[in-house]
Image (cartoon, rainbow, N blue to C red; front, side):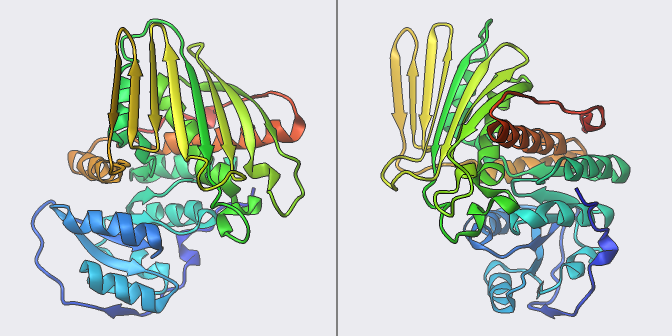
Length: 358
């Protein structure tokens, strides 16, 4: 893989001030955001706007109209069309990288080199070399990176994990995900920039690791035939993972189902217990007795994820989701794709360079 560009590669341009600077209290974390898409609009910016001790300082978007609209709506001091404005702003403490997947690693590296902490949406990176570079940058700069693995913070997934804490033997996990929206001309369907597997299935590689608290050590996968415009074979995969504690996990990820075929369903089976979560809105626990809970509103854990990251920065501690977690998920997906291409199992090796950071 090509080396990532240094921060100096970003050329500065003028910004548009939206409001005059406001006094901020001691301990306030000032945020610069790059990538003014729907996720920023509906998730990250509203969360940051409501969070105590946080100020949205700048919004960067290649769409000038959208950047200005978001800056006004969410109370940012300025908007800009060039990322270097955020990087060169000494008052920005944390950068939120919410751009398309192929830009995540380079923009995260640039922010680290500029002395900023980084929240980057998944996937953190698309190649092994990008992962290695980011892990080294975190060590070199002393800045923190967290990745948008919100499922770790969703209430029903947290309860699912809690039900496994007393286990003394390996478990079986089954993840079934149907994402028919990732198809056609939608940019996330393009395998050259990660496709559905690196772009979305990385959530479930991370989730399985988090549920069992063990490292994935091998994967065997098969995909639909590749080389077709539709369906994209690389986006439709069945895979089986083996973990260091003896647990096993199956991940079925597809984009060919109907929009009424269901979204995501995660089942975990341990000794004497089975726990199922579905679409963030349903939890089914079957042990000595059955317990079912449901919610009309899907709490996906975004606010808790952002809040935990900001608190870790105030406390001077590593965040609950680290750069190493981003590495694991990316490499797990890369090995899944390579296994499917070769129709044979692949070991998952976090090389010595990928030592835990934080």
